[in-house]
Length: 285
Image (cartoon, rainbow, N blue to C red):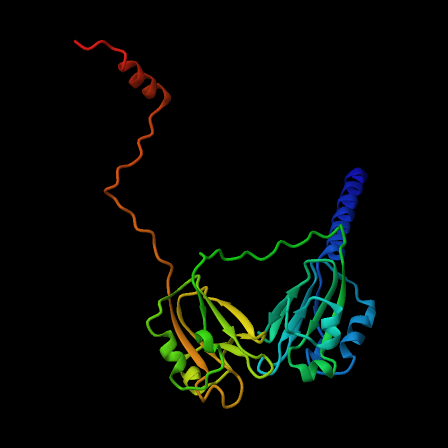
């Protein structure tokens, strides 16, 4: 009986140790700014990162919560872009209002808002990410493999800056957009942007509230990854109403055409090939 008790105690201790080890080594999720979220406040994010001596590890995640109508999360490459609030060459842009960013690499990671006024007021965060060998590095999210399609420069030589109610409608007429094609929007990013939105009514009324994505670099490459109708507008007041908007209908991937009359390849076994070869040496009567 005493032996069974000792065995049970040992098993229980090992299970408790395993659970504790799992808790210690599992990835953590941090809500940036806690209850205040992602907003413009001087030095609040520096203080937030320092509070409780936070240690960010590869595999941890940051949650950014904010109003996507006036804000986004732009990840930039270096400390200089971070200090100057320079979002012209972003590493990544998040704009859902509830962004989960998994830290997959060690080193410094820099996050700002592309709303420059708010960035200057303090809406930016830098974190140092440490690689802990005891934690597995999460795999990258699966990517959708698309064929290499055509690239369309929106508006051709005029770019994304024509305020004419019918210009972009005429530009898209006759073009057959397919999944895998790319739209290139070129414009001056100090005065413009590209909002992809949902809904025909929202497109007609220039309503940006049903956001799909936001592009602000001035050289935006948009891959058409889904069939259906895609809507693009500018969020700048008066510009969309003047005609700076685009609607494109994207067709599905073209299916391969199979010619059923084409003769199938005959796969002969080694013995059959040998017999056929020997037949060539038989004398003809």
